[in-house]
Amino acid sequence: MKEILIHPTAGYYTTRDVFGQRGDFTTSPEISQLFGEMIAIWIISEWRKISRDSIQLVELGPGRGTLISDILRVLKRLNLSKKISVYLVEVSPILSAIQAEKLCTESRDVEPRINKEQKNSITHYKEGVTKEGVKIYWYHSINDVPRKFSIFVAQEFFDALPIHKFQKTEKGWREVLIDIVQESKEEKFRYVLSQAPTAACKVYISPDEKRDHVEISPQSSVIMDHMSQLLWEHGGFALIIDYGHEREKTDTFRAFCQHKLHDPLLNPGTADLTADVDFLLLKEIAEKDDRLIVFGPVTQRKFLKSLGIDLRLKIILQNATNTQKEQIESGYRMITDEDKMGNCFKVLSVFPFVLKSHLKKWPVTGFEDENKTKS
Image (cartoon, rainbow, N blue to C red):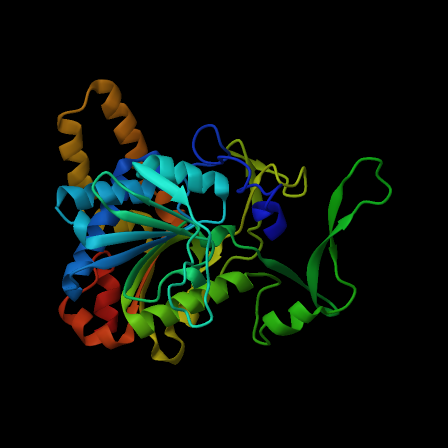
C-alpha cells in the first residue's frame, strides 16, 4: 500500500493531481468553502482560549492546499495573518507544487541541511510566502517540523496510511498477504492467507481481540505518538477529521478510481487506496501516560453544526446568484447530510492534559457533550 501510494516515481500521490472532479475522489474542503471556514473558526476559538500571541499551524497531507487556503482567508479577515506561520507535511512533489502555486506569491525549493549540533539546520525542502506575508514551509515528515507550540490539522490524512490485514481462522490468526497469480498470462494479484502466524500477527493482534478480521496501521500509531509527544512537551492542540470507527468495523480496505469503487489489486498505482481510521487507536495513543486529553470522535455533521455552519450558509446565500445558491447548497448537503459525509466522517481533537482544568472553564467548541462527561 505504501509503495503504491507514495513510490517516488510510480506512486499514486507522487505522480499526479488526484483530487477534485478530474481526480479519483473529492474531499470536504474541495466540495464547500464552508468546511474550511468552520475549521478556521474552530482554530481561532481554541487559540484565543489559550492566549498565545503567535502560532505554528501544521497541516498533515494538505492535498491541493484548499483547506489551508480557506483557513488563511479567514485569518486575513480577522487581521491574524501576521501571527501565524504555516508548515505543510507533504511527500508528493506534484502536490507540493500545486499547493505552492495556490498559496504563495513566490516560492522556491530548498536543499535540507542537517547539522549534528542541530544548529542552523534546514529540515524543509520548499518555502514560500503568501500575499499577506505568511511564511509557508514544506516537510517530508512530521519528524522534521520545528518542535514548538503547534496547531495540527489532519483532514483525510490517516486513512491513506498503510495497513496490515489479519484474518482469524480455525488455526488462529493469519495475515492477509498479496500474491501473484502464477497461472495467469497477464499480471494479476490475489489475496492469500499466511501459512503460519507472521511476526505482524504476534505484534499487532491483541489476545482480547473479538473481531474475525482486523486492520492495523503501524504508521498511524507512530505519527500519532510523535504528534502527541510534541503537544505534551511544547504545547498546542490538534484536530483530526477522517472517515473511521471506534474498533467496531472489520474489512474496510478499498480503492477509488474516478469517484467509483475499484478493485484494489487491479492496475496498482492508478487508484486511491484507503482504509477507515481506527479512532480508538488514536485515542489510546494520545491518552498514554496522561499526555493528552481527547475529545470525540463526534460526527462531522454534529461538529460543523455546533460551529454555526447553518448561520454561515444563510449569510452566504444572501448575495449569491441562483446558480451559486444551487452549488453552495449542494456542497453544504454533501458535507453535512447524514447519508453523505455528515455521519461517516468523524472529528477528534486533542489537547495537553495539563489544560484539563482550563478546558472545563472554557469548553472545547464542537465537543459540548464530551466536555460534560470529562468535567
